[in-house]
Length: 135
Image (cartoon, rainbow, N blue to C red; front, side):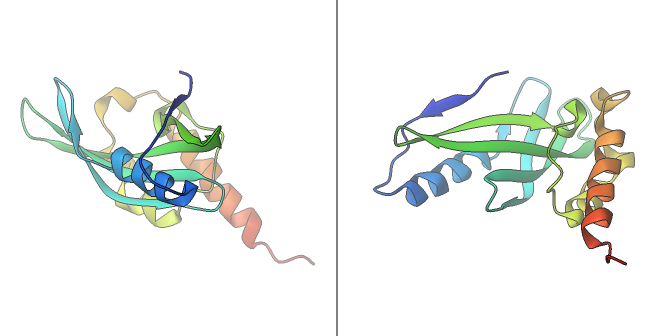
């Protein structure tokens, strides 16, 4: 998947970014699920992390997973590229609390056999590596 760019309302880049984040964190749905963002965080690296609750329409069962959205500003407009943990994004700045909000045993069945488990291990490893005290 590629990037999507469009002109957002707002006078400044920050106003436009806030608008885009509000759009990306709205409730949505598809034929099988309702989606609701439980928590989100966008750091100075312009990576928007979201914990998404997906409620299956056939039986109302709820699952949670983590989504990674890369943000980029070019030519006075913001763009984004959206991925979820199933594809194993090569970004590991996810807040650790998000791993608890979306426990591994509550991922959607579609994530079975995906990169989610190894991605979570890398997030934890990156955090442990950053917290290591030099000898």
